[in-house]
Image (cartoon, rainbow, N blue to C red; front, side):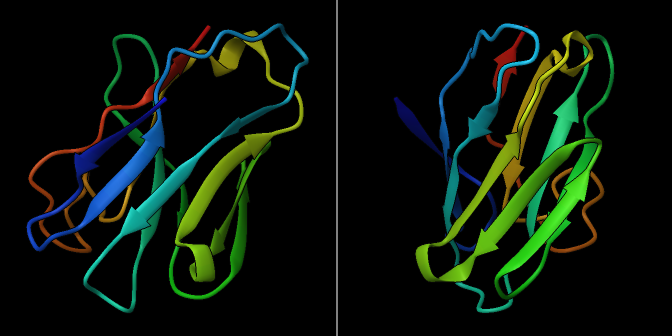
Amino acid sequence: MNRTESGGTKGDSVNQTEGPVTLSEGAPVILNCTYQTTYSASFLFWYVQYLNKSPQLLLKSSTGNQRTEAQGFQANHVKSDSSFHLQKPSVQMSDSAVYYCAVRDTVRGTAGGAEHKPRGHRWG
């Protein structure tokens, strides 16, 4: 199932696969994220929020078809289909968290003024 949430103040939106996602340790995961934005130079972000912690930046991509990697996760910004899917070939128990996809820098507020972040995926 998909859910669309407003990602900013100027008509931006993020469509993210709804969670929770339950996986066995060692299984691969893909969390889908597609977006719409009025800006041609889009910034895409994946945030992770561990239990009782604040969200923190996991991955960031800007314009173009870029692949970024961090902590065993990777995401490929495919501008032609407006996607920034997060994937990891083998999840661990330590990956249990809520994951948020955003078009703007929602937590730090440095790349545009988002009103609120989209709801995220939880697995564990």
